[in-house]
Amino acid sequence: MFQLHSPLGVPHFTVAALERLPIELPWASSLDTAATDDIWRLYLYEYGSWEFNNLSGLFVPLVDFGLAIGLMVMCVIGIVVGGFYRSYAQRQLAGLILYPTWYLGILEIIRLFYFGESRIVPVFLVAGIVGWALKSRWIRDLRVGGARRADWEIRSRRRVA
Image (cartoon, rainbow, N blue to C red; front, top):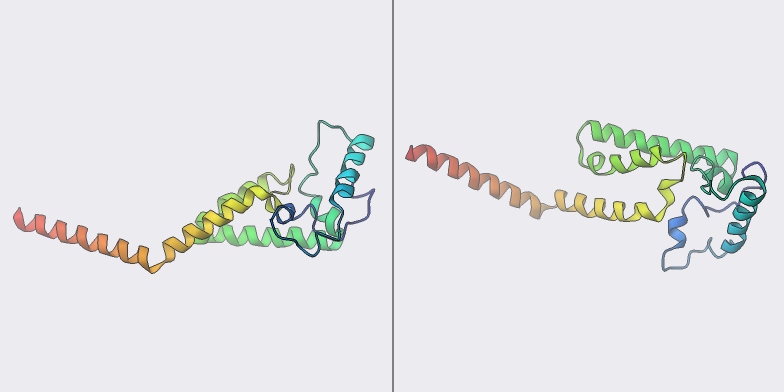
């Protein structure tokens, strides 16, 4: 499909999740979704098979933006995954929460572009909420209070024994 059709010039396949939001995006109105889906169906009918109906995540940025910008998108994804891996290896909160999802996206990139699909939106929402909760002062005070209470109980048991 990348070789047969010119780039769309808008992130239709790359950020498909944004098109499903209940708000109107300025670039989404400039692209006829039905025409884009028709291009994909025509491609499958003429050159592919209905059995193999995934666009492949490797070519999605190329179909949307062309060769230069598509390769830059893939490089940025590689840099982000590398950063999350470093954070994961150092046991930092962002890496521990987000790296497994991004790793799964890298594993699935042959089949689909996971990073733009709507299935990743709940992961980011939950990761944001969990990250905020773990970093919030209220949770920290709760953990410190619990540690003080446990420390007091240990000391009081030693005095009794």
